[in-house]
Image (tube, rainbow, N blue to C red):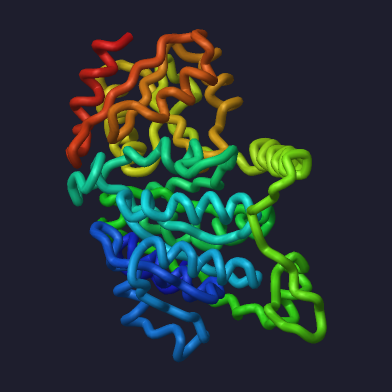
Length: 359
């Protein structure tokens, strides 16, 4: 890393720089706190002058996601970013894209809700991201960064997974990760793909041309019930493959742990400090951090339950991921939840006190 340039920047800024560098063809978005720096940084960098990347502020989040739908239909690397209420407005378009099996990147830098809520950080969009916030039986591939470095790293990873499985991917961060400043090593520049490369890599994509290759029809509509079931079964088989091959997680001080915390994003950072405090007091506790929230590391949580006396789900919400933990554990050990609401971040000492009271 000695010969790599280390830069200090916000998580939102890292998303923008990484998008330019990984060969993104187009960004379509709309400002909303706490993620507005993504669009602002792209506008400042003017990648249309250097890489040819299109950057457009749409008139709304609904317009943004439908522009992403159109760009993805042509095999282009396209993305949008927003925060919780804005992503809610995008749900119909996201469901359409999942049904049409289109790769794209959606970034959600979460704020507290419901409704307009607060502009402070939250993790209360877990259900929306991981359970299919729109209609129909679909999933997004969901990556949860816990640092500014991962905000940068996950852009290319999200595009890679989206195109590998022809499925929308989401980077699910929170306001703390989006707004904090840390050192980051930005990824190297990737050239944007040529039209010939896109046609080769994405034979399903439409060209919109009359001559040459016959334009493909991109749609999520199928009026025949039997055919719709066949499509759905194929998509479900794809989801099973993703669950088998693409689970990502981090373990921290679990080798001798008697208790475990499961946390993602900024809550996982708090958990690590809590673990240091707890261990200084003789409490052997470790962390399992899901990096992919979907697919969720179900097998890893099951294995963890066979080794510890109890699991604490630490979330900045009223209790959402804890449901997936309990489903994985199936009653093998006690599972408790602790979270703060309204944009309040849990304190490490507070977490240690909850550990002592819970088990």
